Length: 213
Image (cartoon, helix red, strand yellow):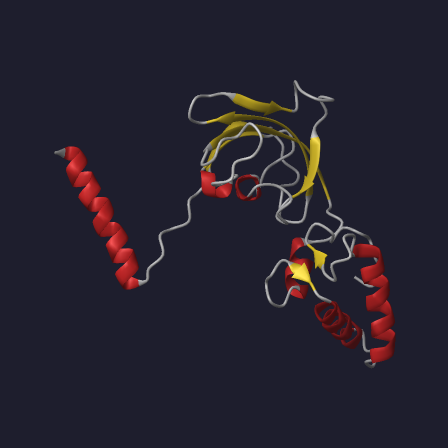
């Protein structure tokens, strides 16, 4: 009887979402602090480069699928927070973290590898990570700068978006617009940063230190 009631409730919820056009809330990352240092001089934010050690487990049966402490060269890994270099669950769950802090993240499939899975991770798997933050460094570019330039929110920069950004920066500095000069700079920027030569600078390619940006 209980199972029938739960099934009916689920059906009614789905029907209400369809009829009302409402969206179900996005799944959240469950965060548990395993260790926190006594002193915290800086907390992580989007755009920071983080050095972490970690172990990953399948929530369903506890199987470990990777450990940076025990596998490979046993070195911690670097990544930039908030620009989709890692799964969404890490970007969400590792914010406001102190150097030396250790967290346990329980991440739903939609914020991990979803229906596709990856390697040892089956489709639709919820994951558990034990993550220790070793170091925080200033990112090569801030997350905020990228989002400001990305006018259509597609997580990549076109030449027109970069050109518009340069124009605004020149105007802020009190210089008159010079379309020819801007074109030369845009061509130079894309020559250095558009690694796959697809005509766009992706969030991952947004790491090259260029004076104009």
